[in-house]
Amino acid sequence: LVTPNLDEAAKLARRPVREPEEMRDAARAIHERFGCAVLVKGGHMKNTEAIDLFYDGHEEFLLSALRVPGVSPPGTGCTYSAAITAFLARGERLPKAVELATKLNTQLHILHISTARELDLFDGTKELEDKRITAEACIHHLWFSDADYADKGTHIKWNPAVKTAHDREQI
Image 1: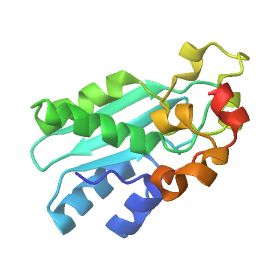
Image 2: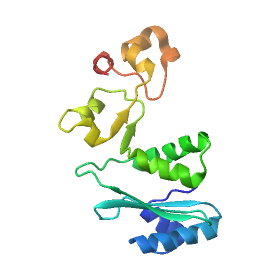
Image 3: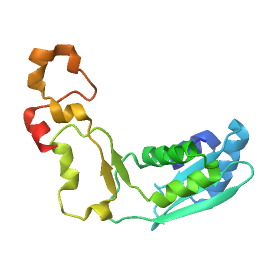
Image 4: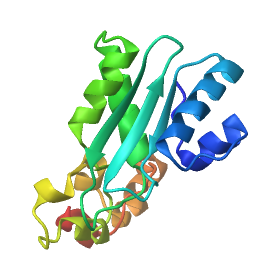
């Protein structure tokens, strides 16, 4: 499965992709050119809905979801792809995995929160359900700070690196 956004689909299909019908043509061209299933993501389209188009050579369908006003974080495609992968790992067929991933309606998942500043996304100006944000922190960011490098050296070298004691306390 390849999951291009509109600009990527245009390059792969060698044609403009701005409208839903052009998404369909691009998905078919990409499938023909590369021989794989295609999910053209229309999140950058200026509609009230985010429209995606799936095509695998046998099945084709449109998926749509209402946009959340004021929330447009980067990385939503990565989250979408990860959700599809998770459903495939559970044994779902690809079309069903794509459909189920769309229903999750997850806007943003933050991997490895490591600084206090990153917590600003959870500032309370909007309900978390409206933001549709999930997050995780690695255990080493809860146990260590940059001051521990003096004792432990490269034994606590991770990416992202451990940060300050203030960051650890805030997380």
